Length: 337
Ligand code: 5GP
Ligand code: MN
Image (cartoon, rainbow, N blue to C red; front, side, top):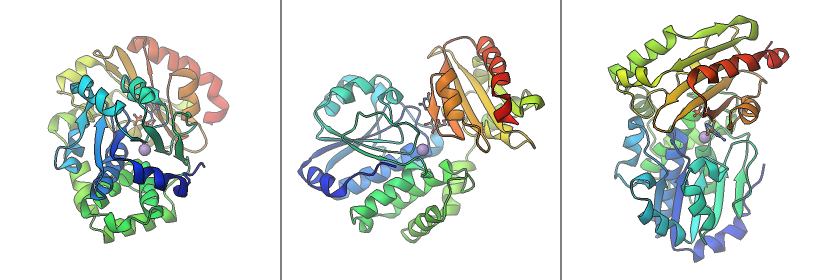
């Protein structure tokens, strides 16, 4: 764990005016929740702070940004380039390598702003002057709560901030069931409920908000799942054609990969999703126990993440990518038993 020295950061924060808060590309609940929460707290302290996301985020998270404040970099790169270059301070949340924010990465690197990273992924890069990195944390939202608490700012946690942080902790822990869900996570959740987060309502907004098409897409994905008992592995795939058939929207496939792990004995699950626009196959990997998918993704699919949840991509076609995946399994046989 690397922890920000709050006494060093405080004067820096006090001397800053313009702040930008950035989530990773294709932001999830943890990325959006942590950015909105931190941004709200900073605004309440009088800073000129805003969230700039590399690209758009899923509809099921739109309620968190109730004032539609999140700026989408892709929509106006020139404008946001100048905001990034002229910022005093940049917080990068829920990622630890500038390659995770696409083209924005170069601009952030160039910016004179002091960079602060808050993140829980493995192997952080060293682009930030101040780093709070802890791979044992359930979520970046939990870390942002601790960060706010260390700055003695918990009185700034409004119901909106509490709900945003609750969302990220809920989504990144798979509703409080993944291994990094600790007693402290639950204490933080308890504090957030006291501050106005309504768990039942948030659960409904995030999980019971599916379009019929999305459920049909899930049904299609599950009926084509392949289970390889020899390697305790399950994988799924989606072609662009099928995504189009079910009117795919960003976020629609979130959580699909976990169904692989719900099968008795399965320790390793993968989903391969064709993306004709970016010309890549996006890969999501999940595991149970000590099979390290961060390592698997780093070594084979240009990605990374956590021990039990990682992602990556391939520039080869879907069939070739899946074939490569299948051919890799024998060398991991001992670890997949
Ligand atoms: P997901 O499979 O839900 O997209 O991502 C699982 C975890 O792996 C997340 O924590 C995410 O930030 C990380 N991740 C996903 N894709 C990539 C990638 O291409 N590169 C890296 N380094 N991490 C990724
Ligand atoms: Mn996260």
